[in-house]
Amino acid sequence: RSSSEHNTVTITTGVAPSATSSTAASTAANLPAKLMSLKVIPGGKLGPDKIMHDTFSKTEFAVKVGQKLDLKIDNTDEGEHSITSPEIGVNIVVKPGIHTYELVVKEKGRFSWFCVIPCDDEANGWAMQHAGYMSGYITAT
Image (cartoon, rainbow, N blue to C red; front, side):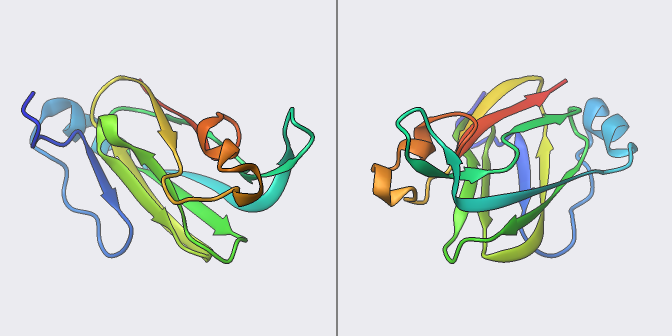
């Protein structure tokens, strides 16, 4: 794989591009988009350290390879957060308020994601490194 090749298309606004010409993507692109609703909640989940940490209400995203997953995210925080997985080229910037973002994964596997925008300040960003808070997994089958 060349370093310039991207395995994922991430769109934060506008219209989705047409599916790539690869057979797997074309087949999955014919599947209806899945919709998942979730929230970003500042200080929303108690950690093992007895501190309330910033959290995404859902951190596990199950997708079919090439199928569009629409993430309807209610970011109740005043600042931006992200769903970032460099391994598969995902970088969704989650703006405050309710917005829908598109996630398409073009290869099978289980990929970790995390928030790259500094958050969970009271705990020095602890939630950004712990699955189930400001990080989790994208599983494509």
